Image (cartoon, rainbow, N blue to C red; front, top):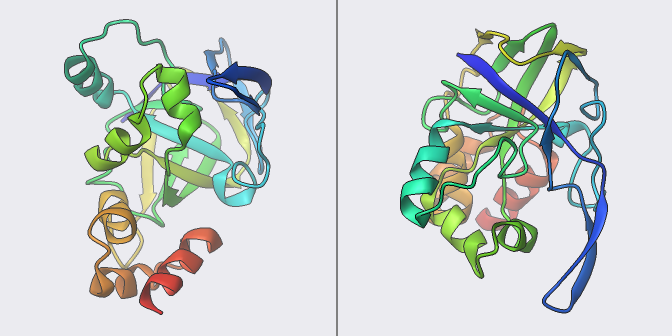
Length: 210
């Protein structure tokens, strides 16, 4: 497992289809070691602090393997690192293998997986594809958010080490499916046993069961 790209952006205001909003989704790759702090990657920012950022969404990881899938499905070859708004473009960390609660060592930092990524209209706007959020969701190739347990520098080429696995053993893909695709009550009950699950997703599962 390996870190292929480190990406960040400061929020900027965009106007698309009559909407004007601030967003940090337009990432660019960074050179050299970058500090990964408790709440953010150095140089990165969010335009919407209500729905993005914070302890449980401190860093967003997306598998580089999916770039091939999306190139073939969309018939495009214009993707650059950070295309999907991710901070860390990774190799070898797929959603059907990584579990919520897993702890991963990347460079000098230690992170813990907290939830899948929920796509919004801003991703569709960036891709220039109306309704892409739904397409992205149904593919169940969400990537994942993580909290930072130990701050430190990360850099392109750093190995990624699996430090520990959550005892529930529920993958990111399973968690994503349980809430947003299958809406399976039994799977929802299992997800609530994940101690590292973000409060937002915990509340959503509780609401689903109610």
